[in-house]
Length: 30
Image 1 (cartoon, rainbow, N blue to C red):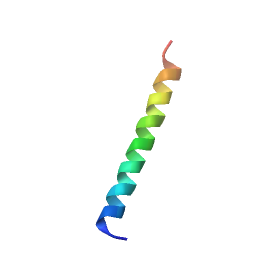
Image 2: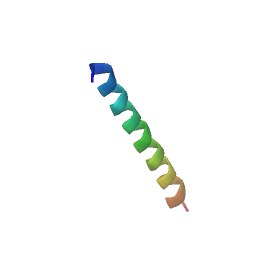
Image 3: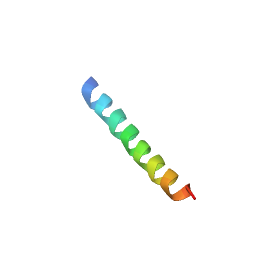
Image 4: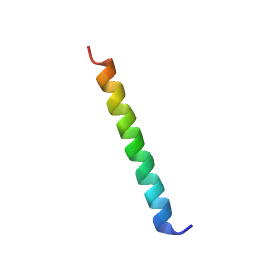
């Protein structure tokens, strides 16, 4: 596992979290 694999993993995780938070905000909004 080289450095770029770690960076790609972190970016993918951040994008996943942003997508989840985005969905939550849509559902929570009145």
